[in-house]
Structures are given as structure tokens and as C-alpha cells.
Length: 118
Image 1 (spheres, rainbow, N blue to C red):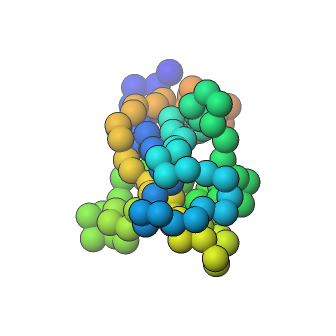
Image 2 (image 1 turned 135 degrees about the vertical axis):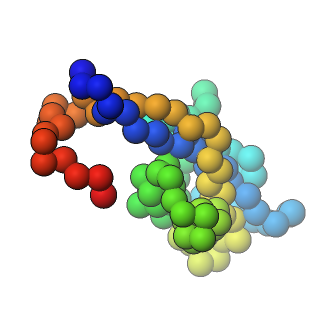
């Protein structure tokens, strides 16, 4: 392991939110959630998530895990609408804990001399 190959990612909690009394069509309940720790998605025992709801939020999760400028919309916007236009639910993404990773623990591709901070 080289001297400084560490990087930080946020753990995320993604929770179902909806107006009180709203009908949720995908089978989820307000308060249902999953957590993302590194690249691993964790669901509580006995709880599922609609593949359509997951598909709506999935493209944002890797970006939401990374440090962003405080003025970037990714730092401030936290709710993703349900993909069903008849459903008022949303998935709320919350950054919960900053976790440290090492490059060599996450990929077989070594850092090289030409590695540039982007």
C-alpha cells in the first residue's frame, strides 16, 4: 500500500417519505429505508424496495457519496420523486457518516505516477 491512497465517501440512508395519508403504489411504507456503505446496499431484515424506485435513485448515489461544493445542488437537494407519476412518495437521501477507504482495497488498478487529482 502506498503512502497516501485514501479517499472518503459518505454512507447514505435512503428513506421513503410522503405526505400524511398518501397512497403509495409500490408497496413501500413511509419510513422504509436502505443504507449504502461504500458500494454495499443494506436493507433491514424483511424489507424490500421496488426495482423502479431503486432505479430512480441509483444514478445519484455515487455522486451523493462524494464531497461536493456547498453551493452544488448535489449538496443541498435530497429528495428524488417516485417514478410513478401517480405516486406522491419520494426517496430522501441523507449523508450519515464519512467513511475512509484505500484505493488498493477497492480496485486492482494501481495508482501510477501519472495519477492526477481531478
